[in-house]
Image (cartoon, rainbow, N blue to C red):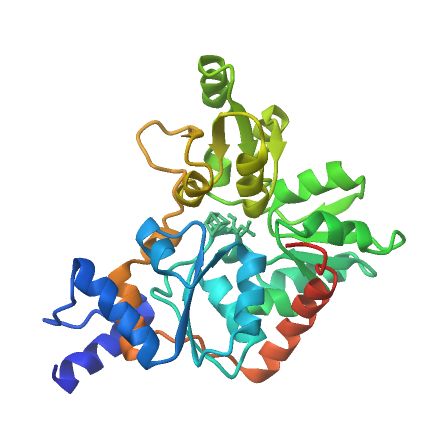
Length: 339
Ligand code: 13P
Ligand code: SF4
């Protein structure tokens, strides 16, 4: 490959999100899987993947997990390179926790509506309006937002952490208002909510899900707390990504209507091969809106490219990293009982 073609691809990286090198032949099928495994050995890399990733990526990962489990795996790895298959804020958290490792992700355009809708500046303004308040922020946010937070939470530890915060301090919760409202109901703590939502979880239709339940009277509805209150009120079980996986595995029911990102069905079906899993329906009958298109930007080809050329790489200003690390460490300390 000519350096000219590579340089062109590199300069397009900020806009494109991945290295698209003209005329480069990328192995396909089994050869592509083998090439990724070879790169893993050659570079002493570990592949971390979120449950919402495309099945082919989930199947090749060394470690599959939710955002808390992946943050821990990134912190603890002794590999030289972390190939992070998830969205940008997750890869950024890996870099914050383990700065001496090279963190690459298949596509930097794998964003998140929650992270994109919240900023450090916005949180600073909220803090000024509510002096004395603690800021608890969902991990689905960028490093600048984390740096303005007192503590980070994930869907699996949020309830435990909110309960542990001092009763005499008001709490600002950002950026997911649905998760925030759910936590207020569960814990009885009043919180000031940032007005953000997940475009995937807010797309579920209560009316269409009610029809699914009527058509499948034996099925249980399970939902992620990023879903709207009307869906959560209807659900037999509300839980984090890991919580939903465990519930399906252990519960006696044989049929589940699943109100979260569809990628999770891949692992769910592996863990409960004889159970029937039905993706919950969204408002728009013409779209695949229960798939997170950010998560699905990652492909095996892009994973191969980012490992081979070690680009795109997550780089971070050290002062910002240290500020963002503090509330993540506070979260990890309060999450030791949570798997
Ligand atoms: P988890 O924290 O459950 O992994 O969820 C991350 C996410 O993006 C949910 O939409
Ligand atoms: Fe963000 Fe929603 Fe996608 Fe999760 S599913 S990464 S919250 S947009």
